[in-house]
Image (tube, rainbow, N blue to C red; front, side, top):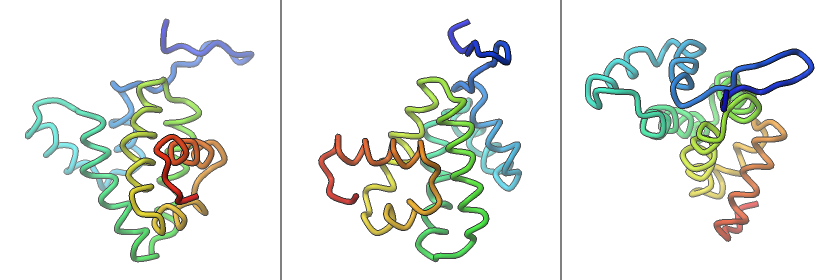
Length: 137
């Protein structure tokens, strides 16, 4: 019941550490082999590690190359919808500490990524930057 959200539409299950990586791979099937390799190496799914080692690397590459805007937009839509809006606290922590804080390590990269972020993701990113006392925003 802790991952249930009760709304006027009924009870909705929030995305959790158990389903966020399979959900991501379902929307981005090009990561199927990376997930299989991840599981073989780690003997389980480690969401922070998967998003940090696999997703961030590709996302940052796309942002630096200033290419694949449709794919970048799809990633940020997933982050907004599935991780922020429909994610439990643990999933939001993946978004904040593993994805958004990493983008903030490079001010130009972070500024370039803002145009792809949804409202909530951008707000969270700015909160992280303020908390870390970085001057990127």
